[in-house]
Amino acid sequence: MDSRKHLHIPDHFAFILRSGGANLRPAEFKVSYAIAVGGVRAIALIGHNRCGMVNLVARREAFVNGLIEGAGWDRVRAEEHFMSFAPIFEIGNEIEFIISEAERLSLKYPKIIVAPLMFNVDDGLISWIERS
Image (tube, rainbow, N blue to C red; front, side):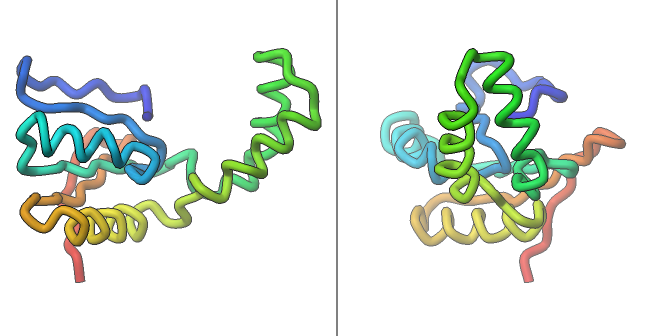
């Protein structure tokens, strides 16, 4: 979901699904489609440091005020929206979540290689996350 980085990959090389916190649960049907119809056989699950999905509670007021000012919502609707969805998208620790999501996807799609990767927004490097 992060807009700070553009991946430079060849045309027709990969399906790209951007999802906050590298959380593919909300996009699971798209993942299944890419595997079943698109022939995907490997998933590079790339999270990044300084992720906005970590500690969402700390961003509650900014989120609510942003919807009020930017989208014209009233405070009650914006607060209810945040409270309904923040628990679904909160990831806790970036690395721990990427590992758990990679393990979940590996169990769900046992023939698919799932590579847990971490992008460092400070130095621009992508690193493999070793699963224990």
